[in-house]
Length: 504
Image 1 (spheres, rainbow, N blue to C red):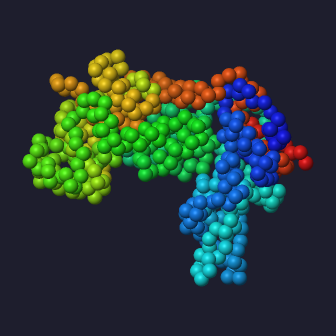
Image 2: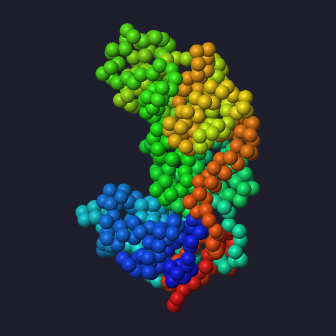
Image 3: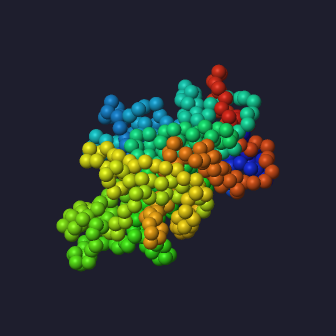
């Protein structure tokens, strides 16, 4: 669309949030390009670049720490003559042909989400290296026509769409990104489960795409995010969750759930403060450690608060073992937890979605071990068997305890682990990204399990946009006030369309 067409359109009652790429020739304050991004945000669209990015680049308020991190990525340039003290290059959607500058180009787009960016470098006096002198939005008219194909390739990489004039095709109801790590030996969802999400999504007219850490710059091209990696606060999963939340995208796990569930100290205080039955737990520091010698009942379990999949969880049978384990754990965390050892043949796991039970399973202890997962010194692990149970067949008191605990954390997707014995039901922990593995947690519901989760995302996504569907809903839009490069012949159309035009 031209900028004028975009500004003049009426959007009342549009169902679907659009992704808008603003390629106007200038983003100056109160210019046509500035208003395109400003009104896109007002209409609830997700626009690249945002008004915040425009103002940062316009006022040259680039964060010094961000620029320093980019300077460390400047590679190559060894063949540039010493007589050359400055140079510049163009980056399209974080892409550049030179592989030695690829990291710099990608990270510059992650920090300053401007589609066309000119990066100026200057030599560092008295050194062999270079530093960034300026980052400015690039006027599309200044792109060398010989690089038109490079531009189009970068656009296709960013949107995962091939752009050419085509008859409008029906757009999916939602684009869902699933963040995963194919190299993780203990992922929250195995490969078949991930493919089930893709397959069931296709049947629901939901486009599900598996993404990885390297796809952070493309995150805003999706409508929602489902994190299927083991989460942590000091980890890229938290960065993805915060970015999605800032963009108004439905996300599981949300940042608050990650903060609350990945730290056992927080959960211990939360559960205790709300009267939830748990094994007897206390927080221990180096200073309080000596006071425990005469007051412990063994065996006892020690935990580093920030851990997952039974990592950093040890059992002590006497004070010497307790002290040795605690001192080793203090190297990782200034606070550790001790918890009453409570053996059962299996743990209950109740999956809770938006406050309602989604699935129930029994997790049996690993063979000849006191935990579900047994980690070996060689890095390998053994896992006890999983037995799915119909929600209606699970003990009522187990379900009630799980629902109550999940409500204390949020309204997303949680896995509540509990132990049941003759004295009652005890909550062990609340997981923010519970396992959903094919052949295990889905054994009862099968495809309905994936359908329920996808339908939850769809309801969250469509809720702010419900109303009469307007013309053009479900499209990706490029606004421009110049002629764009011609689209190559023979390209295959994707499920979205774009109108390209100019006003001369």
